[in-house]
Amino acid sequence: MRARLYLHIGLWCALFAVFLTLSVPVVGPALAENKVGPTETNRSIDAYLRALTGIERGSEKLPDTFQRLGKGGLLVIFVRDENAQSEFLGMMIAYVSWPREVRVIKVATPTVEKELADIESDSVAGLVFCSMNPPSWLGKRVRLGSSIVLVPVAQAAP
Image (cartoon, rainbow, N blue to C red; front, side):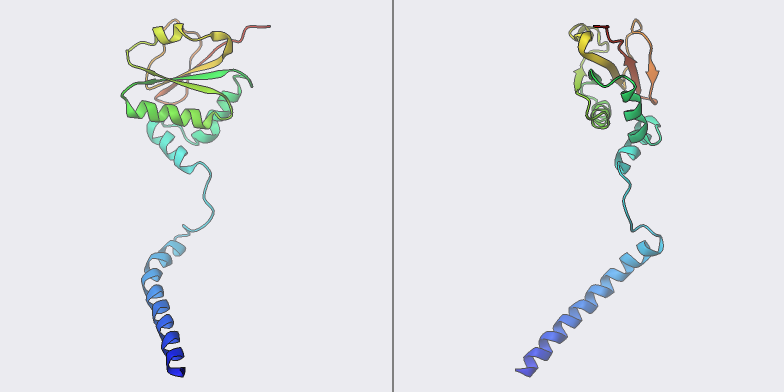
């Protein structure tokens, strides 16, 4: 009976030694480089926005910009259909603009004239164009990086 106990303890000690032998080369350098610790919020979104548009700390800057549009109103995001980068950028803009209501519209044609005609401007706070140019007749434009253009929509007074 004692032999089984010693064998059991010896087996677990051997498995623990194998675990340490295999994990120390991986964990040791990470600890030495101080890569273990709390993660930054929205780090991946910031990396994507920096790569796609050149915006540093976009997860902080974009929500601040959208809050200046006012508390209410819809944010309409235009993306190019069949363009994965434009669609991905539009979805990230929708994510960082939370809790504002958003509508993502995929545009198949080079112009957005038809889609703009279908929008009720009373409920819209702003228009965002991802990897596409807004029509020249639209008012004030705010460039939010190399691929994003925001067009604030003036709210009619009640």
